[in-house]
Every structure is written in structure tokens, then in C-alpha cells.
Length: 120
Image 1 (cartoon, rainbow, N blue to C red):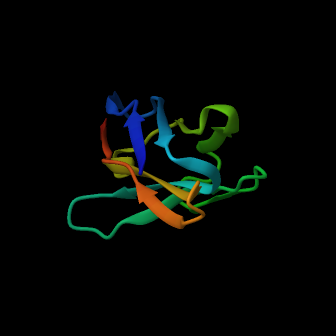
Image 2: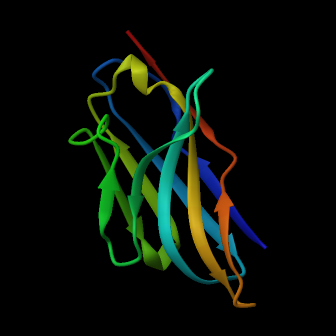
Image 3: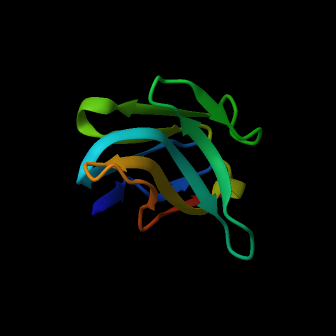
């Protein structure tokens, strides 16, 4: 089994910064893409940022230039640096990892979510 544990959420004023982290552990042979999603109340879950094993990144238009996704492959950890936060960034943020296990199964795993609240 594989577990994803997120950390770093909290309450911040508009214009502030937060850094999220997500550490994967368990029967991991390799991790392909890792990503951050978010879900605001009453809205669908949406992709925020994604990073491949090789380091290629993509961002939602709404966070481009403000958020930066990175990963530490040695630690099986993905980060999301969030700057210039806006109230509309308020959501539960979820980590996602595309994992190949030692049993050669390739599965998408999710973290439990971490709340980010941006006050105006």
C-alpha cells in the first residue's frame, strides 16, 4: 500500500504565502507524475499544478506565476509554494501521485487533504 501525507495548510491573509508538502511512503517502486488539486465548497475538484518525474510542470491559469510546484525524488515528496494568495484560493488542497508499486501495479493515490484559507 501507499500513503500520501500532506502538511502545510492553514490560515493566511491575502497577499501572503504558504508552502504545502506531500510525502509518499509505502511499497513504492517509482513515482510518475505528482500533482496538487483543490476543491472549494460547492465546486468540483480542479487541477492546480502537476509535475512529471522528469520535472516538467503545468499549472492552472488561475495560479500561473503565483504558485510553484517542485519535487524531491529522493524523498518521494512534492511541494507547492503558494505566493500572492487570494481569497479565491481558499479550498481543501489534495496531493495526487501516480505510483508504480513493487508489485508492478500502477495506481493513482490521493492524500487526505489540507485546508488552505485566505482571508481578505
